Amino acid sequence: MPITGIAMTTCFEKKVYSACAMIPKGKVSTYSDIARAAGSPKAVRAAGNALNKNPYLPSRVPCHRVVRSDGRVGGYAHGTKRKIALLRREGIKIRNNGVVDILRYRYAPLVTP
Image (cartoon, rainbow, N blue to C red; front, side, top):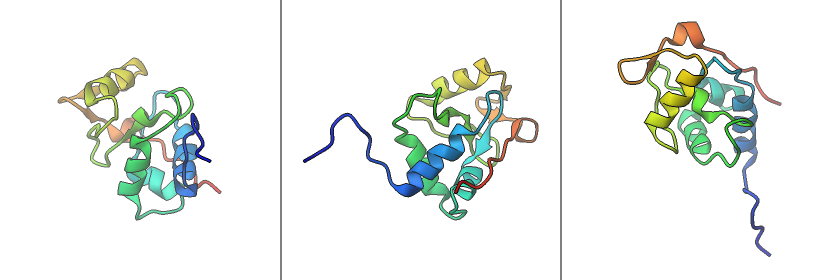
């Protein structure tokens, strides 16, 4: 019997969402930080793919707060312009069409159990 209305997530995806949920407002983490916190430091692309299909509201799992290691904003399921707007609303300064001062705003979540 198929389950409807509930997102089916893997153990890894749950760890990714838990790590992302720890990022405070006004801070960002990298996809690499999230993969590391989820216990799979080499699974950076998989962490990004999990965040792309985030079934939760941004208030619960703020995937818009995850950026590339070089500071570029990166992708977002609702579009890069929307991601930039959300980050700016939280006080993150963006320059050159999507570059975050990663040293100023970075938050590295702890490894999730």
